[in-house]
Length: 385
Image (cartoon, rainbow, N blue to C red):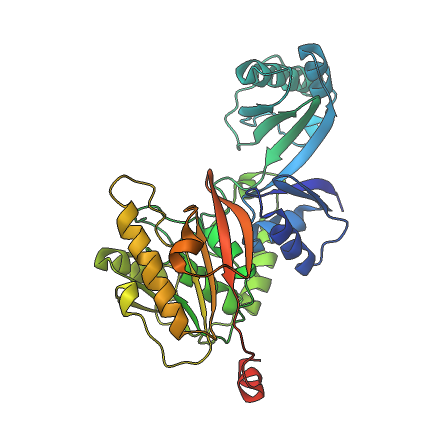
């Protein structure tokens, strides 16, 4: 079976979470670097990881990595790649690029050089001088980091956060990949109560329900590599069949979402329906100050407003204080909250047990973690298993 060097790209701070996902899927010899996890696999693994990874952004095939401090080195290194093993004669192959701390800082020039080198290589293999680019798309990227050039082909297409259920988005939505990461970084398990009191368009509750029901996040979408002529439809058909067998459609998780904005709640209900989860999550319109629960143990995982826009600061500060008051009544609950607001702990009224730096988009945030003081009784733990 043909093996590739594969890269699962991630947001900064989520590399370890993605590596754990890959390990759980059965992959070993993982190499974790900034913004990516590198592993080996064939076409079936490309299909499997695109379908199953919840926190990765996309799956790339690495075609080469080499030293390049001049445009000539970049050209020759690119031309040396056996592009004919990847690209058919009619392939459409746009080239994108990025450069970080490299002497080759002109990204447009680097893109043009890589494009020219690929064409020159294909000319010698396909014995023609012109390529129509009317066939399947193969998105090539040249990434320059210091003195190293990395060439990759994207297998995913639209980012893996595009699960196929969020047709509309409310203000400041959290990406599906980040929402999944917040859940996987917590101690929440599938049978335990989970509440998001700032649910917005429902992303965190929906991602939690998919995790609880063992629903592959990519089950309702397609991927760029499925259009490639050498990628047999049977590969994805087999992986999707296996994912459908694992999907616990009859499982009822205990997941709740609420929001002050009734339009956001309507969106959350719509998105849950689009995800096929309309009867698996309970949404309601409610202010966070009105939140209460009779349950002695539970989990709050949430992405509240940050107060980034003018005029919102005082309102957000009040929300954080309200949440702090509520948590004093829910002392045996665990709370996980992401925010870019530097004064959160002071406003909340309590130092977090743990905190972790994450990037929500380009915004540097802290993921505050408040853990339950007491363990649930044995009979409750038995129920949750």
